[in-house]
Image 1 (cartoon, rainbow, N blue to C red):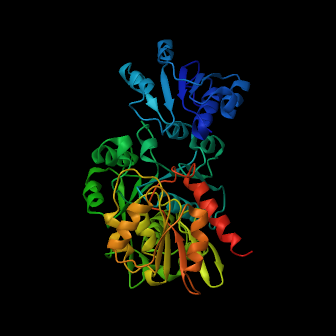
Image 2: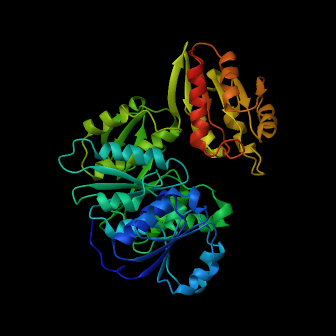
Image 3: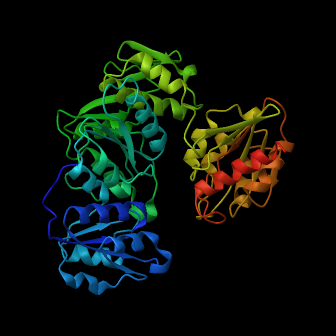
Amino acid sequence: MKQIKQYENEKVLVLGLAKSGFSAAKLLNDLGALVTVNDGKPFEENPEAQGLLEQGVRVITGHHPIELLDEDFSLMVKNPGIPYDNPLVAKAEELHIPILTEVELAYQVAECPIVGITGTNGKTTTTTMIGLLLNQERAAGKAHLAGNIGFPASEVAAKATADDDIVMELSSFQLMGIREFKPQIAVITNIYEAHLDYHKTRKNYVAAKWAIQENMTADDYLVLNWNSEELQEMSKQTNAQIVPFSTREKLANGVYVVDDSIYYKEEKIMDTSELGVPGTHNIENALAAIAVAKLKGITNEGIRSALSNFHGVPHRTQYVDTINGRKFYNDSKATNSLATEMALSGFDNERLILLAGGLDRGNDFDELIPSLEGLKAIILFGETKDKLADTAKRAGIQNIILTSNVETAVPLAYEQSKAGDSILLSPANASWDQYPNFEIRGDKFMHAVKQLEK
């Protein structure tokens, strides 16, 4: 870790804890800052705040007093999920207090190169693939996963050595809080409309994603999805070297698919059938990861070995089990229609039973109709089950079943299936109507699948 001096004796407010806030506060304290932590959760229910207090950090919990900002802080580090219209954040902006997220701190102390990955869908899978690839054939150091994937970036950066790489998944929320952050290689998997409740407009959302390349130079590389005309146009506005990837066209200086084979420039890497995860979207994820691997000098043999043995990350088209010839897949992370569309692209609808439903955010599901056509059956639950049932009828699905939740959906799906079929949980909705998060929803699905074996 670089021993930077810029925070010594500086008053810093860390707003919001969870993993990233805890790590940021700890790092700033270690760097000599005068840290105050403010978190809405009551102290007695707040192990992060309790741990920081034991380390001598000042903590204020249970509410967000606006008068805190009378204390002349030189910096605010906020949890990425806290919106900029939060009263404390808005007041800090009014007072011209710099507002960062902890990925900026991670960059400031990191001794090793950073590979940054952002996009609307596919970030976690692509980040995981890149981590696996960069740990192939490695003579020294290690590639560490960090960021939005669940490992606080500042904590990882504080421990990484000069021989390592940090492979950092970055959300639009995190990227809004950077100033100097600059990856050696950046990846944008795709950009669709998302998180408008936070960003207010699509333009703001796209700008947040595009910030990943803001400080890159001609010595850095920007890996872009060339299937997107929008990203092709945006590529004209960066100083970085562009490395494109596409499933639709041959690219002289990129990664692409021809006749079900993956190439880098003119060099064949592997067949798409060798990938360990299904779906066109996962081919795109693999192309992005291969681009990074080739830039980092990984051999074709190493690439094939890593990607053929990669069977997905938890809750993202994750293979769960085969029971009496039925294959079960957990895609609980599919919290919007686009993610479910992408998951469905990897399956034969005539042999597929889909489990879907969840929180009603007021949207309809018309865009799903083409992807739903031909499904063997659909099992629906949660607040949106009636809306989705109407969508399924318009898609021509004959076998539509409504049920209470994921746990009851699994045995119903099994009853509708036979050997050779696949059963996919891909909800197209957030989980919060019935489950605290998509991980718990996915865990409930996998537990219900295991119960079928009894």
